[in-house]
Every structure is written in structure tokens, then in C-alpha cells.
Amino acid sequence: MTNKNIILFLCVCVFSGNDCRQFRMPSFIKPCKRDDPNINECLKKIFETLRPFTSKGMPEMQILPLDPMSVPSVTLNQGQGSVNFTALFTNLKGYGAKNYQVQKIIADLKKKSMEIDLYFPSFRIESKYEVNGQILLLPIKGNGKFVGNFTNIQTKVKIGLEYLEKKNNKTFIEIKENKVSLIIGAVKLRFNNLFNGNKELGDQTNRFINENWRDLMQEIKPLLEDTVATIVMGIFKPLLINFSMDDLFPI
Ligand SMILES: *[C@@H]1O[C@H](CO)[C@@H](O)[C@H](O)[C@H]1NC(C)=O
Ligand SMILES: *[C@@H]1O[C@H](CO)[C@@H](O)[C@H](O)[C@H]1NC(C)=O
Ligand SMILES: *[C@@H]1O[C@H](CO)[C@@H](O)[C@H](O)[C@H]1NC(C)=O
Ligand SMILES: *[C@@H]1O[C@H](CO)[C@@H](O)[C@H](O)[C@H]1NC(C)=O
Image (cartoon, rainbow, N blue to C red; front, side, top):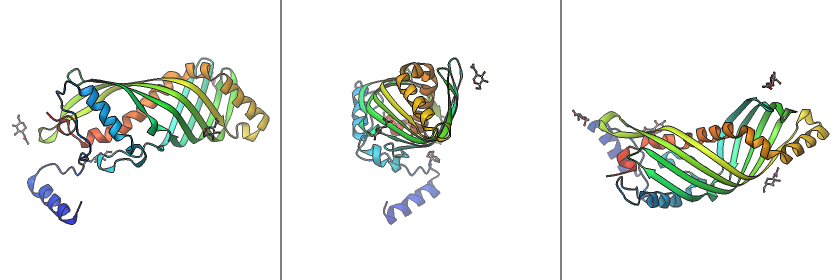
């Protein structure tokens, strides 16, 4: 924004009584028309256009950098069956979002639903961890550095929308429900410093986890999917707060 623009902007804001949203859709994004019969293809194109911005983020749209993606903390509490643990991951960095491939988008604004299928060739998570409990009846306890490598990740995000009329009669979109399902091709995990740095026990436990990751994943899948859904929600929320229905899907 130039100085002149800022002054003009302030004047308009102060004197017109309009809402003073300073966020604008960047000019290289051509929003999809609400009644576009090919809205699915249109949205797919927007996702392609946005790929280069996964690393930089888009401050003008309140989208933070997604590759690497920073998440302050994730708590996993699983208290049933043969997998029973509490894990706290902090300072998470996720690498690999920028390689997403959009497989399918089905948007039905009238029915207030959206389904987005994305494929990620690989995704790496690095964080600190604290874990205590048991996995497949084997104890696990420790804290330190965690690395998780995930490959061939198929994600399906189903979103239920709600339209809410807010100030100035503008309609805003809210996410009423979202459900994520994950299919992961391969997993390699490493918990450093398990059991107070006992190398033998730590190596044994890491080997056990990696040999049995499919069973383990099966047990914690719902928890994992809910966690990812919460993170996805966090990415879209600022966008939906700052941009109205007319901005996002013009008539
Ligand atoms: C889970 O682990 C805790 C502590 O180790 C134990 O008290 C509890 O009974 C376990 N729950 C199940 C369902 O195994
Ligand atoms: C919003 O809509 C209502 C009824 O349609 C109207 O009375 C009111 O003046 C509108 N307010 C603004 C700010 O446009
Ligand atoms: C995860 O991937 C990175 C980068 O490819 C590699 O350096 C690291 O050794 C891998 N870690 C595990 C636990 O497989
Ligand atoms: C934009 O969204 C953020 C939430 O991330 C919020 O804090 C901020 O107030 C919003 N800005 C406007 C102008 O609504």
C-alpha cells in the first residue's frame, strides 16, 4: 500500500462507516462465481494457483506459511484398548505440504457442502515430544526429539458450511463441521531419548513401533483424523473471518 492509499483507506474507514477490512483478495486469484456450473474445476485451479504460496504464506489473506507448517502443540490422549497413552508434541514443524496434488473437489454451495481430496507424496514432522503409556501392550515413556516420515498420504476433507449474516448485511461462511479421513502408505517414526536415554530399550521400542505401525495407526486413526481436522480448520478460519461470501464467491 502506498502512503496515499493508506490515507485514503483511513478516510474511507473512519468516515464512511463501512467495515474497515484491510484484507483484499490478491489480483492473481480469480474467485469462482457462486453459480459457476464448473465450480469444481474453478476451485481446483485456485488450489493450483496457490501452491507457490504454501512456503511464503499469504499475509493479505491471513494465510500463514504452510511449508514448513508450524503448530505450537498437539496432544494425543488415547485411553482405550491395547494402545493407551498420553503424548504431547510441542513446537511442531511439518514439511511437504507444498507438494500437494488436488485429486478432486466437489463443491455444492446450495447444499452447503464441500469435499476436497488431496494427495501428498510425503510429509515429515519434527517436534519435541513427551509420551507416557503403552502401545500394543508394550510400555513407552520418555521425552525428547521426534521425527515422523509419512509417505503416500491420501486425505479426504469433508466440510459442512453455514452462512451467517453479519454486520452490514454481509454474509460470511462458517465451517459447521469438518471431517478428515487419512490413508497413509508408509510410516517411519523415531522417538529419541525414550526411557531416559536407555539406548537398548529406546531402539527396541522404536523398532517395535515401526514394525507394527499399521496396527498402531488403526488404533489411533480416529484421534489422528480429528487432530488433523482441527489443524485444517485453523488454516481456513482466518480466511472466512476476513472475507465475506461476496468476496470468496461473487455473484
Ligand atoms: C491405561 O493406562 C493407565 C496408566 O498406565 C491405566 O491406569 C489404565 O487402566 C489403562 N487403561 C486401559 C483401558 O487399559
Ligand atoms: C440490512 O438489511 C435490512 C433489511 O433488509 C435493512 O433494513 C438495513 O438497512 C440493511 N443495513 C445495511 C447496513 O445495509
Ligand atoms: C525422515 O526423512 C528425513 C529426510 O528424508 C531423513 O533424513 C530421516 O532420516 C528420516 N527419519 C526417519 C525416522 O525415517
Ligand atoms: C482477520 O482474522 C483474524 C483471525 O485470524 C482476526 O484476528 C482479525 O481481527 C481479522 N481481521 C478483520 C479485519 O476482521
